[in-house]
Image 1 (cartoon, rainbow, N blue to C red):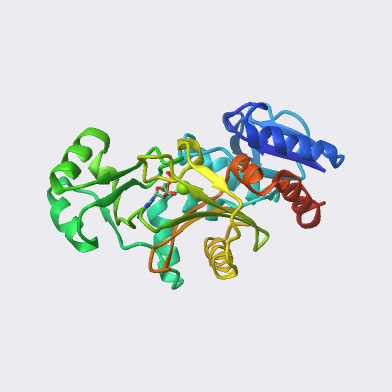
Image 2 (image 1 turned 180 degrees about the vertical axis):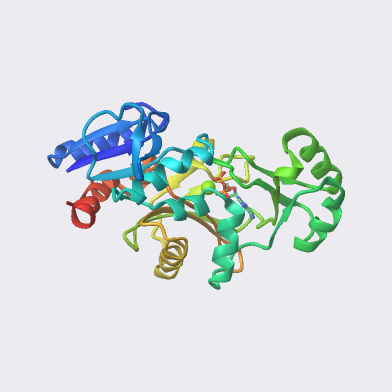
Length: 293
Ligand SMILES: Nc1ncnc2c1ncn2[C@@H]1O[C@H](COP(=O)(O)OP(=O)(O)O)[C@@H](O)[C@H]1O
Ligand SMILES: [Mg+2]
């Protein structure tokens, strides 16, 4: 199989390196594609790529362009899909997953639990928006946060106002969300592949941080994750429509689970380390069974 991995990063980046390695080990031809090298073109009523498309068409493409690639540039994912190229994660689910509020909307509509959240888009309404989701401290989140970089905690209205003035552009919209206190809480990452939770771990935030992200120094542990939580992650991935998803959830001290986000291009270094599983090989085997020409 010819496997294309769309990424702005190079072959040394962990997921790229592991996926290429696993593909080669299983006899496939895998290569990286820079998203900016894909320029969707329509000419003479045909969908294609221009001006000078390079190389043969892949049998399957893994879109991992990341949050830094703008929405208009996602046209390439739609173009591939419309042109009949198999994709590990389709364009519409990716668009939903890239927007945390859109994700919360879909999950809630499907009856799945998320922390109370509001999309705030005007500085003058901060106090009223805050009051509608709970008491301070509250979580403030960019709709397109990644690796915990656009997630903050505001202890008071004054702190929230300062944060908005410093770090946010209110008109772009941001989330205010009920804070699930760190005491007694469990943060969990579940990898869902082809509808099944194939790997899961606990993530413990670095000391002094409430954000349990591996990229922020969080530590992953191979603690068994109960079947009901795995099932919840599977339902979340199914609801968004993703074939591969990294689902972040947490469990409050009273045992109530909440879904936080569904990543369409999850990293898996921490997960491989914590569980000892060969996640890259699982993904490649999945491509073989589901996407072989
Ligand atoms: N409502 C919340 N209450 C408590 N902690 C939260 C909440 N939302 C996010 N966090 C913490 O911050 C981390 C990052 O948030 P997340 O929504 O997953 O965004 P990112 O895309 O930046 O990872 C979560 O894994 C969790 O540890
Ligand atoms: Mg996350």
